[in-house]
Length: 345
Image 1: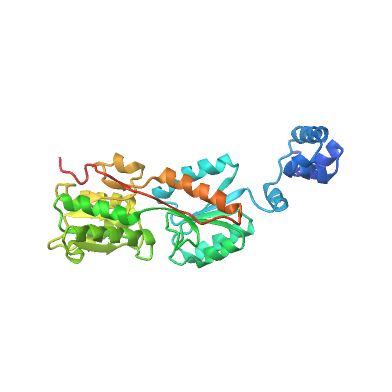
Image 2: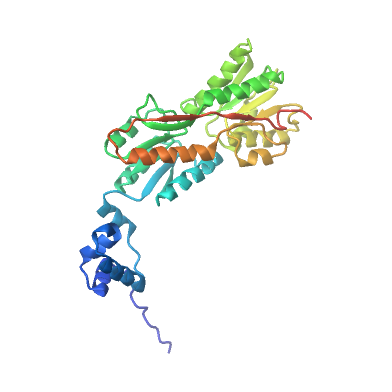
């Protein structure tokens, strides 16, 4: 007969256990964890020794509630699958870790409803601040959230008339750089694989491209063929090729980001179209894989790590709630990175 023993019930240690072991009150243990400057040195050493002996791990949510605000900062992006955001995050994390703050990442998927849901959860968890790339053009709900005491900084988005702090890159200038580069190579039929115009970055890059065309003395309506994609993914970048005009088609593709360009390059290869000899291709963001593609991808570089660090720094300032705080907007300049996908060898 097999002897079956019920495992001993496990119980998480609490401050009550630490207090009993150290011979102090629960309030004293709480002060040791949250306000050690209020505790006598001898008592402080005794309680900390008990914590170490028992292996007690303080509950982060409980400490947050007692302290009045959390030690976590919310970061909400539109698409965590976009490598641009994954390369911005280390810059944010580097700065936040210096303040012993934990990064809580959310992805709205360009859904206003999902964004609102995550914002509610973050506020309920009493995060001191949120870095956010909004899902839509309306940021009134973010302004209201800040009025309720949550620090708020727009990430990769201008500050909308100084209602909120913001860190962004000049996307209009980036579009101009891309357009001027392709025009200088002699291209007069450019397809722009763009995202929804409701997305500020997409609209700005389109405006920059049009400015470059006008600066060359040409008509944007005659030079630019715009294809609006439902999502900025490689699959949609490849599918967009089917929507290009067959007669007098483009000689160059400007993709709104490198992820879309990746799909376009794959589709062109499958069709036997040589890049850049038959079709020049360029992207935007200059993510890590851009230089590793074959051919290597011409792209507009955004200073992603600096963008993240600057955004985190602004959020730390905003979250302190200083009455003398002035909203700031930091705008970085993009850089053209010319590679093989636009330059015939």
